[in-house]
Amino acid sequence: MSELNDTLHRVTRRVIENSRDGRKAYLDLMRREGDRRPEREAVSCSVLAHAFAGALEDQAAMKENRGPNIGIVSAYNDMLSAHQPYGRYPDRMKIYAREFGATAQVAGGTPAMCDGVTQGEDGMELSLFSRDNIAMATGVALSHQMYDAAALLGICDKIVPGLMIGALRFGHLPAIFVPSGPMPSGISNKQKQETRQKFATGQVGRDELLESELGSYHSPGTCTFFGTANSNQMMMEMMGLHVPGSAFVQPGTKLRQALDRAAVQRMVELSGTTERTLAQVVDEKAIINAAIGLLATGGSTNHAIHIPAMARAAGIRIDWSDMAELSSVVPLLARVYPNGSGDVNQFHHAGGMAYVIGELLEAGLAHRDILTVWEDGFDAYTREPVWQDEKLQWSAVTQSRDDTMLRPVAGAFQPDGGMKLLTGNLGRACFKSSAVAQERWTIEAPCRVFQTQADVIAAFKAGELYKDVVVVVRFQGPRANGMPELHGLTPSLGVLQDRGHRVALVTDGRMSGASGKVPAAIHCTPEAKGGGPLSLLQDGDLVTVCAATGALSATADLSKRTPAPDPAQEHGVGRELFRMMQANADGAEQGASAMLASAGL
Image (cartoon, rainbow, N blue to C red; front, top):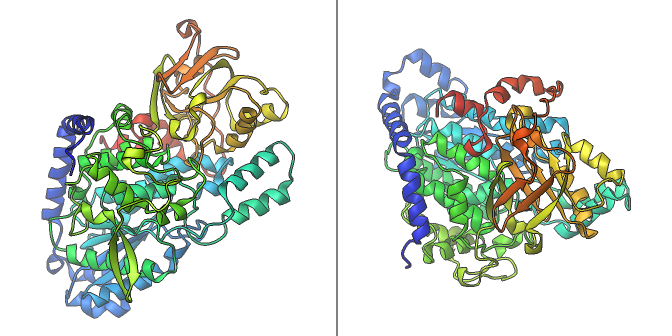
């Protein structure tokens, strides 16, 4: 067993020190909440009658207070393929609860939008702030205070961070995240990417593109690329908030059902104890483990925003400097599309999270001593679940079954985690170097400045971008328009790059967790709205984007410029309902949350 890496130790101590006051205030609040949570015997009969009225099969057990009651917070809808399986979960979980002498109720539902459906559309401007909405909905669900544990049903992009943030305000309860798994593999991701680029250049039509997309996204379950949804599941494993190894087991299998049953059983066991509450499990070391997992697997850049936001809800402070320093010592152990050719099913079959966690622990690159929801601690997460002899068992994973997807620390794909912090006179930004060929880590070229994704695509179609160029898309930050993903730019910019041009993207918006290939400085902060550095750029300014040196700069003297005026905010598709969140949001590095900022967290 290796000693803890020096850099990891140093960053951990810094995060703990920076979080000291906030963490103490949070834990004090959770102790008070736990102490004042009403016992059912002390609650009025009218309140209890309202709570039990709809639970026809469990009324007698609830009335007699026979066992713990589990609150299910579900993000079910069947617009999201990943969440479609959740439709039947409540009924099954109630049956499992009865087996273990407990009851379960659906405490509430949360919204859950699919970024794949809103990608490139106006509705994407609601996406990031749906996380605040989900957190508040989770708070509403658990506010009834009728529950002894919380089952959190969510998988995709903003949904898991939103559930986490909301549930952490009820951190005196034990809680387990219950995933439902990825869909089976469809056409290869390389084929899908090639068809998208052919469509961008007019080589194939809409019918061919739709058939390609349907070949990839074809059935219930999580999309199989390693985007934000699957990065969420990876992080829940790294934090010890799943039944061990349950992240990437497919829906509808005996193993999946056995893991779901085990989750309910464990919640029943934890109910009424104060040893493994959510507030205790989600501490500084768990947050750092989540960041380490993100780096080691080449996960979604969206989590450069979500990790700080989730941490704040638990009284913890972590920023991009901390994550960049961790990236300098955490090697890249996995290559999953868009950072490789295989998908999450192949990653799981190769050894998956059990192998990654085992390697990190043996190298002293993750915290072994975190408090997990599972009784055997974090070591339990180095084993993979199997359905054998008609029962759930776990098996050790000691080696990779496919070294094109998973490698040991000693033979890692690259020595660092591939998340770079860029700084300069254009602000601070993130760069996902693990997805970009090293010869493209440095791009220096004149910029073209745009204010919408549609304007970039129009310029591409008009042939205006077939040259070395840094494409700047500004006024895409949280306060400007909700910080939408700009994944729709990837095919066009990829075509330019494939034709030999030196191309980069600079934006205060986000890219999809599935984006890669093209160098991109994203989440630029301060954002352009209100006079941020990107608002000072003009067409033709020479801009440098360099992952090797960490530079994000323009040669022009920006101090002598007047900021471009803030664009008018658009109405429609419900965007106007989120203006309050946009107006009060803080920066991307703090988590881009109006709710957390307004709460003083």
